[in-house]
Each structure stands twice: as structure tokens, then as C-alpha cells.
Image 1 (tube, helix red, strand yellow):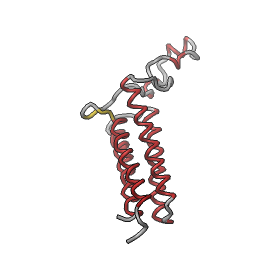
Image 2: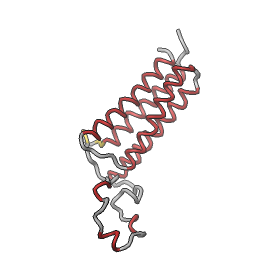
Image 3: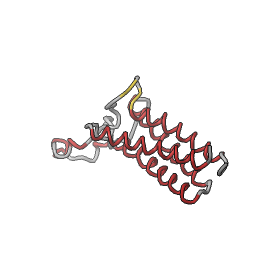
Image 4: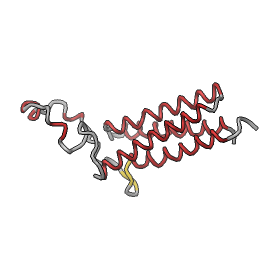
Length: 156
């Protein structure tokens, strides 16, 4: 396969993962802060795929690989937070570290609490792997595809 073909397949994979994330959100699974972090590199990978199509330079494949690796790494970190292997951001985990700056009135208020989605709770899993874990696995596969695109000939 050519560089552009492999790069476009990888970019389409990021698009599919983003569509899936928005699909889950549409079905009522609101994303947490870390879920949203994982979406940005996929959007970048899609843009890098478009740039590869338009300009054909190999640099876009390396940037696509970096974007896919970045979202995969965030997914691993997020899955580890969900499993309790390490602490996550205090602003979206149940550790309570983010409560120190709140007043008593803030702690008793129920305003705005419906919008908080905890990063350390698994909302959905398949075969014991959470959405963050699946994102990591698929993203690392996309990273490998981007690297294959880098190594592939420009055209046959």
C-alpha cells in the first residue's frame, strides 16, 4: 500500500473512534475530562491525514503517529486511574484532593453537580476493558499504521 492510502486509513480510524465516542455520548454516557482529552489528538490525526492527502509529505505521517500515540498514552493513564493503579486529576476523581479550596457553602451546594463526570469511574466496559482502555488499544494500532505509512513508498 502507498503512504497516502495507509495514512488515510489511519486518519479514518481516528474519525471512527471519534464518531464512536460521540455515539456513546449521544446514548447518555457523558464524557469525563480525561475522555475529552483523548479526543483532541484524534481530531489532530484527522487533520494530519487531510494534510497528507493534500501535500503528500512524510512529515504528516510522523505527526499522525505522534497524535495516535498521544491519545493512546492518555487512554492508558485514564484506564489506570479507573482501575485505581494511580491517582488521576483531583478535579475529576474521587480522591477529594480538589475540595481544599471550597467553602462550606460550596460543599453543601448542589448547583452544578449534575455536570461532573468522574474520571475514576468506569461507565462502560467490554471484556473487562473500559472505553479508555479500548481507545488506548485502537490508538496504538493506529500509531503502528501511521508508522507503516511513514515507511511506505509514496506511490507505486
